[in-house]
Length: 299
Image (cartoon, rainbow, N blue to C red; front, side, top):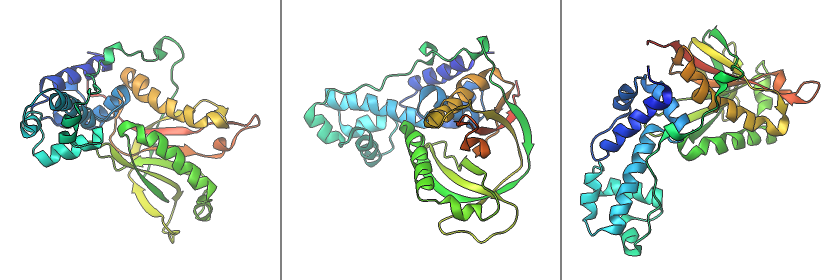
């Protein structure tokens, strides 16, 4: 069986040959040999963009070159590269380049090239040759969480900035106080409601509740179904290194652990769990757990 980088590269090559045609995440997941959601998360980890965001940027990169270096009709360029209308093309073009195609052409911009990716040239941490990543597999029953919601997006790494900022606001403004009164001070950071086409998802900071409660202002109550999870514990680090440690652990799970494991992503919510350990031990070192829903690989 091909390794993960080879399978992702196969889909990148497939995309390149069909930039002027119809492409869908499910079609590309079949090319890679993954379930839709597992493909979405692995592609994001290895490429840095969600699948359809990568497709969009490659199409716009080719379009921008033709806008700037040819006299072709803008509508023809748009239709050639899979944009259904001039309006759709203009809106996407302006979002990426900060101006509409007509203005871009007048300026004869030297187009910044969003190149085709080659993940086979990337260096991944060879953890199999050294220390294995430790994990536990547990079956967690259905649970309810009350908390605050942040709408974010993994496009361009927005979530890597917005989620830490969300936590800073949560702590600075003491949003946890009314949650702790519901019965627990152990906090969840839950990634849920994934939109695989746009990369959008919701991040919830909250606490688990065992019964119906009166919701504090600006909070929601969400129920998460029973699932099997792989649990990864971040290394103990100083408080100022905590955010980087968490993000590095997330990255390593998808780039290094999944490719060599017997599991694929289960498709449900992922979450971080912060208990007394995130407050620091006797040496003021902190850590937490990351829960990833999993299923056995079919092949």
